[in-house]
Length: 106
Image 1: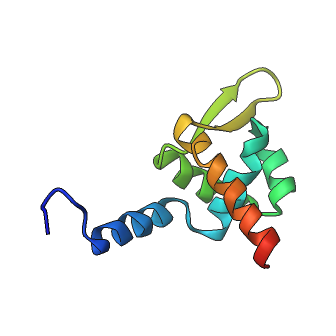
Image 2: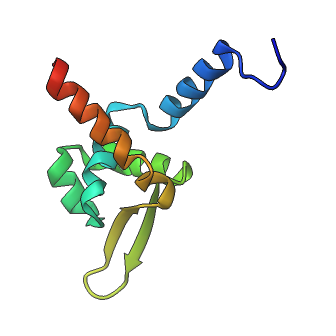
């Protein structure tokens, strides 16, 4: 086997590593919800039905993974907005494919 070609185990590791970043239920829900554009924290809370604590933790995790960015508007009242980064937007076609698969098979 050529050292240039990835082994099957390495390919599986890439999938596992990817799922480690995006794979929790709440991360997927938030990422999917942000496909529609920038949202305030309370909008995400309502649309995802996550608790404040869970949503805050998930958004912190997604920011650390560079999948989501945060913007604070300091006018009264202070508002925090979240949106997908370029890395997060690159997942949109993946979500579309998963939805198509689910429509066919679930």
